[in-house]
Length: 129
Image (cartoon, rainbow, N blue to C red):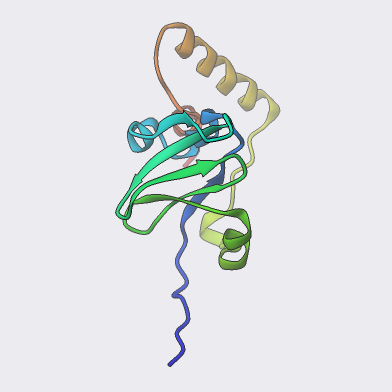
């Protein structure tokens, strides 16, 4: 028998070698990721998964699955398996230049005061109903 994967929407980000790219998930979700070095000395992220510890290298996608679990995925597999989700209920909100400046200013002030806050936290403050 043949089976087709059910269409589900996941959240993913391509790891660019900088831990900050994971801000889309929030610190409470990725607090146990370990920044490490691979065999060649390149920065990578170690992720505990149901199958054991897995490594995400620069260029790999880090996916949050349907049950909140995280795992890395090589770019070629990701591109064969996933496509960008776009539905009318999930359209991205565009911010004015002034709103972006204000959000960045708030984020900078918070980091200077020692708060660990994500881009999502700042955006939540500016969402319009």
